[in-house]
Image (tube, rainbow, N blue to C red; front, side, top):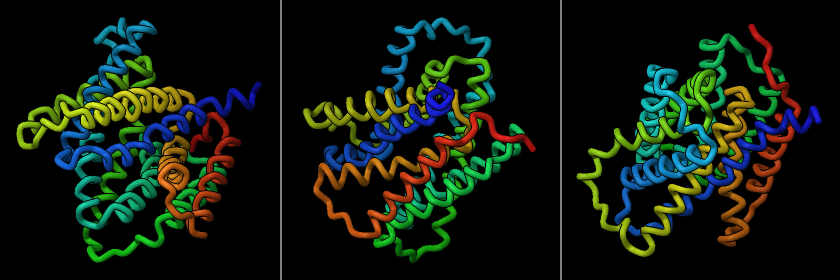
Length: 294
């Protein structure tokens, strides 16, 4: 029973990564005029609606506004917006593979630094081993596409990773007073409100086409509503540093979807990367629920 209690948090995170991993595929099949800004807005808005329905069902909507730490919420919303801005620009500057590897790969390191500063908690020895395996696995999967012409552009994915890691840490702090699903609902609402004015600069008619509606609903309900719900539930049972490393399973899910459903080839470097990522996950299953303090 103790083991199953220990893996409950990681299991929630891995399920959320499975939902997150289909985001790229959905963006690929979206209508050509679908811009990243509008896709993000639709995803956040419909995700917020999904989480609001979830809150209605479990009673979390009754959470009084006065107990919500406003500064923490503002930090969460600001960090996610900052991450989105940096990530999309990083993809444009250094390419999808490099932007993704640097951004996702450096997030656990930032999470460890921010967690140490905010909570005074140091990662365990197992975390270092698991994180090294996961980062090597991501690099191995993407090794054929890792060509860098613009080294200055690497600042963007690294900065974005810092924003993502900080959001995870402050989300953990939010859970000290606010129920998990309601906390994530507030964050998605905040991001959607910030992005809403920018919708006037991009075409939105694609949303109301048959393909656009299917993609929008899948993005909002699955990759935002369900994924963020499972993510925040996992975070409530897991430390931020472990969560950030487990989140590296997202590219694993995307790779497996490409191999089994899109019939993409699986060279040796991809197979090695998958094995390393799975090894990282297995190692973290033996992580203690609370990390040792400094």
